[in-house]
Amino acid sequence: MRNLAIHTTLCGFFLLLLTGQTTPGCQSQQGIEGKIVFESGNQMPGPGVQREPAKGVKRELLIYPLLKATELEAEGNGFYSEPAQPPVKTVTSNDDGSFRVQLPPGNYSLLVREKEKLYANLSDGAGHIHPVEVKPNEMLQIEFKITYAAHY
Image (cartoon, rainbow, N blue to C red; front, side):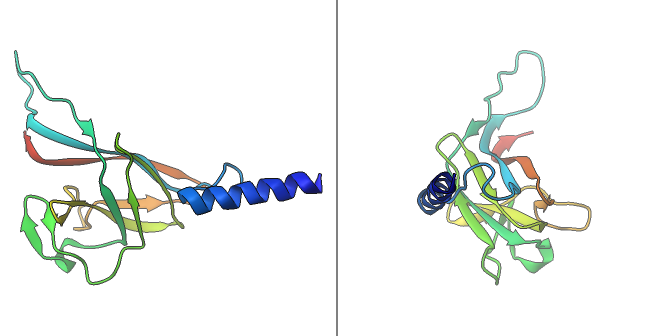
């Protein structure tokens, strides 16, 4: 029994070391998971309109402590300057746009690196940039849409 526990611990350690992720049950599963998608073209509803579906994309996702838009320089169309503080975590999505990152409970802002700048197109009523709340023992499901090339 003791050998099984050691083996399980070592497997979890090497999985964390190689992939940045843990095995189920090794650690509380809390953070953010989802998909980063790119939308382009005409997204307006209407008869005979052919909309291009959103496509999952590989992008760098930067997770910051909760940021207000007034803390960054807006460069238009959802693009922002780099914040003064470094991100809490950075993760790169897979080719299909999927990602998973563990985080401690708290409030965060999400931005993606796009065209050598940072991009986010959501804010709340208080002016926070793409806010998310990570709760204890919960994986928050999100879809991060990159929409600057889409028309609505």
